[in-house]
Image (cartoon, rainbow, N blue to C red; front, side):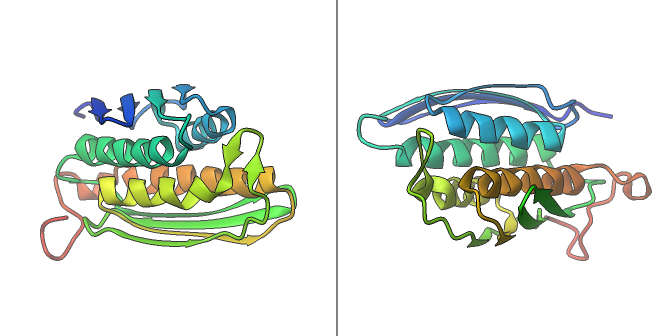
Length: 197
């Protein structure tokens, strides 16, 4: 089996990001974005997806958190796209329903090569710790565009903002793990009637 590992950098006038990922890891992560709660969510994503993930990011946090959250999403998506290569032998689709105490999140993903995001998560609270919740959809939109995937992420219900957000990131990790995993019956085969993804 070839190594599905990628190291990339993304540098703009607003952010500097170094990212490493191993799709066939054990969930070891080292995340530093300058936003504690966001680090925690990315740790949860990596742990539940069993992805080894390193992110070192700096951004114009004196402006706000929009640029860094969106750019990390883009970089993470691009890393997945590169690590998956031609996508031969993968399951392609993944889904998970994740309970986090009183909260329940549903995630479904198709590594189709087409970008689409359906994001439904109501969040009345403007901040969780140091994280501005308005940037949650920006992260997922960045990921979808970078990875060129179809992602549906829905919070079915919940009360605690921390639990609601964590349920979404954990469901996202589990669904991505399923979609990226290799199917022994599809060795060398692209999982599409088109012959390309």
